[in-house]
Image (cartoon, rainbow, N blue to C red; front, side):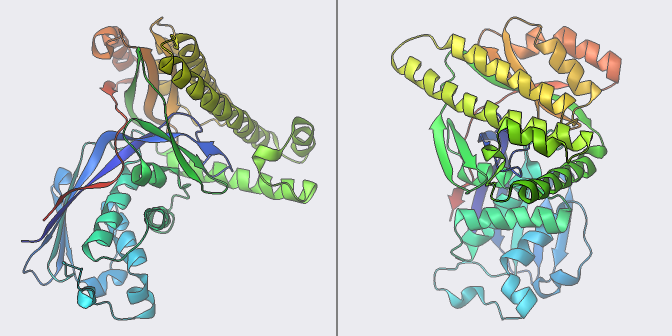
Length: 400
């Protein structure tokens, strides 16, 4: 039996939150929490997809997919299929997967199963990993020849058109282009992708999952994106040839603020500050690499990285206004501990995870027992800690 197994990771973003749709550079990485997909050829006349964690399955005929009403994970699956095979669905050009001698699969009898170790709603981009793993696997099954970047765009458009989330491209790039033990520098203006190493000598990263996801998240995300797009339109109107938010200076910013309401001013102030923090983070990463190479302690630079994380959280809380009481409580308590170098909310907002940079001698599940108990008593949610490692992006595990 023909079989293909794909691993599609979630992601963290070290810094550059919400810059993926604001002309910025973001610094994400793939992590060791992932979707696992199995693609098999069977004798069934239809396509069968199983969401193993949910104990749900879906059968459909390929030609009828465009007419089916979907929700939840099925909407992502539908979007990936329709966008990947758009010539068939929207121009009715016949699709014959057997037209290539290399293609080993047929849509008749395609069986796909998936399961995940990515916490849903934690800000680790589980939906992007789902779309990236599926589109990558289908591309391999049918030898479609799409590049990883083309697959990232399809996964992004799936979120836009079939989930109603106007996300940037960072999550998809992180999942598809991640490298083990390396961060990605993704320039969201020219879409250039580079990778670099951030040695973690004497320090660690872990996630503190609040287990909270407020319903406001998607609507607030789209609202903020619309605010910044409107501000950019006004900036182009006022300054003409301005290339990006990275090119604006403080004098221009003050003038632009006179054309914006207070809410838009706060959103834009966060974006400009975060762009500067990303540049500082990159410089510190280079400094840390040099110090490690020369056997010099990089702890002072790690302390500065931690301060950048804290500053990002403050901006997300006070200027972008996408935090929440639960996350703010955890972050404030964490940074009081001497072993914690920095912590910030990660993801779209209103819940999810905190990304924490700590010294290696800090054992989260032991040291945070009291904090987690107090959090549970105060908010009625059971937060949890997860160590995280920087891992390889989407890749083939089995190809038989």
